[in-house]
Length: 306
Picture (cartoon, rainbow, N blue to C red):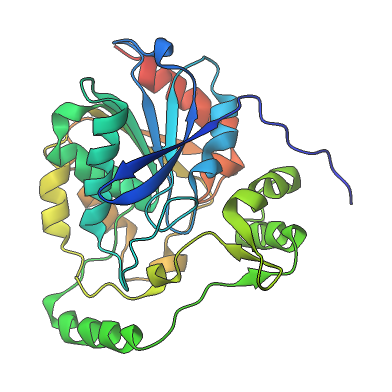
């Protein structure tokens, strides 16, 4: 079945900057002249195994013009990898701090994070509350509580994985990459999958195959347990208004079974001082792909509120 090609309404430009010794890539929409006290820069932080280009559909759906910045996290997209065998979550906070030093050194920003990016911006906003004017969390649920007794097994898994080469899937064509994107998320429109495929992957000259633009080291187990009380101590210090957004079709039990019941998440999110909620109908975890127009409408209202 044929379909029309997706044509972006707003064209991004690429900027490369030095962030903590890494060549970082960011997609930037809008000029600095659009920034003012009521409309600061809006920074969008993607999730695990994603890229900043993933937000193109959301940016196109925003009704007004503003300056928007979507970096590729370290080891994803066009941002360099640190040539390490493991990734550590605090590095995302360090990178975000440096990105804000570059893009908005003197003015608080509006921050939006999806999934892993949502977890990062929530912690950051509690650690650096004065740097965030508004905060939007797209399904950054956090992780199940990790009991200390799990530590020996987790360390052993990490040590074992350090001895194993990690790899990501590759594909014969961009059409196959788009097919994989739609397999991951059947709600993703075919024309959007086609547009995203060359941003989510790159052609490997040696093999002639398309490879995911992500460092395979991201797949290794994290030996550091998720300490929920430490995370919540940061959440409690968030001064910005927070908009929590989830898809009506998201089923977190698919990821964690009964290890992270909804009641536990509700107890956590209740500790955020200033919280609003929104649910997007006919949307799952990739809600910025599924319903970018509906999400943009919520953002427009929330970011413009006095």
